[in-house]
Amino acid sequence: MSNIYGVWLKEQRLAAGLTQQELADMAVMTRSHIAHIEAGRRIPSKEDARRLDRALGTGNVLSSFLPDDGAAVADYFEAARLLEQQAVMIREFALSFIPGILQTERYARAVLGTSFPPVSEEECDRLVVTQLERAKILDDPVMPVVWALLDEAVLRRAVGGPEVMAEQIMHVVRLVETGRVRVYVLPFGLGVHPLMQSMLTLMRFEDQPPVAYSEGIQVGKVHDSPAMVVRLEGAYDLALGDAMPLKESLALMRATAKDYGHRD
Image (tube, rainbow, N blue to C red; front, side):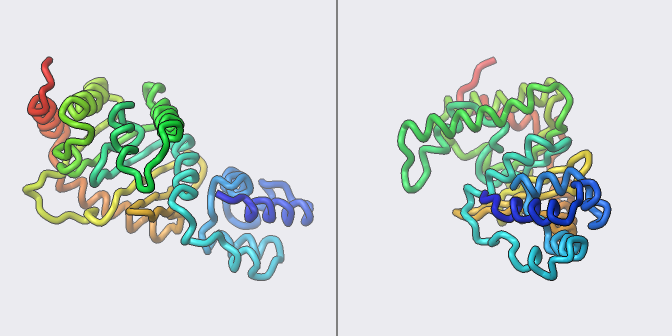
């Protein structure tokens, strides 16, 4: 993600003789939030930008020149990936694929194999390494808290073939069994649910406002407008309420892995 906006904000702050904490106090924000914007890791909401304009006396410059919402999905995903590393709680909803931080190497390669335009073998290797690096946040036995809500289609779609699917599902099962993640399945029998339109990631932090990330075909967006995040959290909570309980979800995953040919 381009950091022109963050650099300009920092220049205006320094020109005003303010520290990040002083600007944060004046704009009713946290210091870490200011730091993430300046570093290009966050895009301020319109409300944040208006408060920064007032605090810095910059008219409506920061409000008017927010980064374009039509930026490439890869740019927005990079912002989401960086936020993922800072989160204390991550809640995922997966519509078609296992969430990235839960993917095995072979599953990730199978997903990347569907890219259009196709990626080279070298680029595929690089992307797989990035994916596996993301998963290292699970090396800590406690933080971040990770929940995954899976549409049943995620389990039934044989990405990479039966062997890859059996391995992938059992990888998630082991994470659930050790208590590292909680996974819930939205069964086909439920019919429609509030999250059917796209995948969704919700993230919470110790010292900054929560954000959401949604993604579709060639479209991705980080949402940090408080009103939008509340709406997306509400949709997630409604869907979670209709999901199978943890033990039943785990049993379904085990049964599905067995159907793909897994043997204990």
